[in-house]
Amino acid sequence: MRYLVISDIHANLEALDATLQAAGGYDRALVLGDLVGYGADPNAVIDRVRALPAADIVRGNHDKVGAGLEGVEGFNHLARQAIQWTAAALTSENRAWLASLQQGPVIVDDLMEMCHGTPFDEDVYVFDDMDALRSLNAARRPLCLFGHTHVPAVFTLGDQRSADGQPRARVSWALDARAPVPGSPFRLDLDGGSRYLVNCGAVGQPRDGDSRAAYGLLDTDARSVTIMRTGYDIAATQAKIVAAGLPEVLAQRLAMGR
Figure 1 (tube, rainbow, N blue to C red):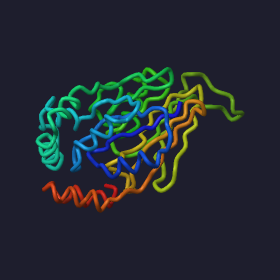
Figure 2: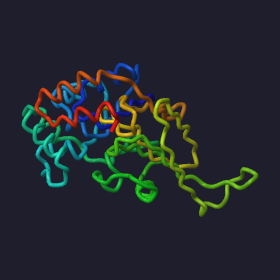
Figure 3: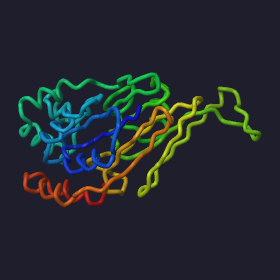
Figure 4: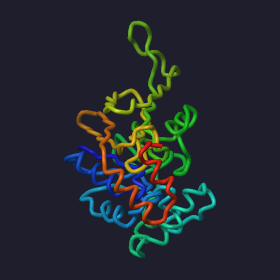
């Protein structure tokens, strides 16, 4: 199976369309939440995702607030303004569909599960090794795909090896954290003895200094995950945000990848 992994689209239609085009053929899409918020095309993005021929989707925190399932109290002032605009802009049909999205984590198959924040709480961010370790311990599959932070990251929990390359006792599990270098694809090969926590980055709101849309391609036959980037028409997205009356900083930050 070949999976397309996308997360944190945030109502950025140009970034989503560019990602779908760049990804090429795939068997199924995994959508890790936050379809809306920040951007000016919430209905069009939802329509695109709903039209995907095969997809597993979990909700994000912006999806919950935009659908009216939760209040805005936990959002900063920019996110609050954007999601209040979004809630008013959504059609009744799309609001109901957004409200119906399942809560993560969701088991996809024997290899992987998916969530928005973490496997133990859909709203918690993975910021450091302790967050990652707690997530890996809570995960029920060898590979857990997550989003929420808008930053590509790979955490691997595996057994340390001695100088001759032989595995040590299981008590010597070691956590390895890697941040893919912006600007080039990053491939992770999965071995049978490790556990993985992988964030493929944000489609519509990257925050790692690379303004291009980020997405992942997971090949279960090759047992690999590749984190990819693709450019999109940022100026068009910015113009829509400004025209909608959303805070201009939401448009400006897209060009900086922040």
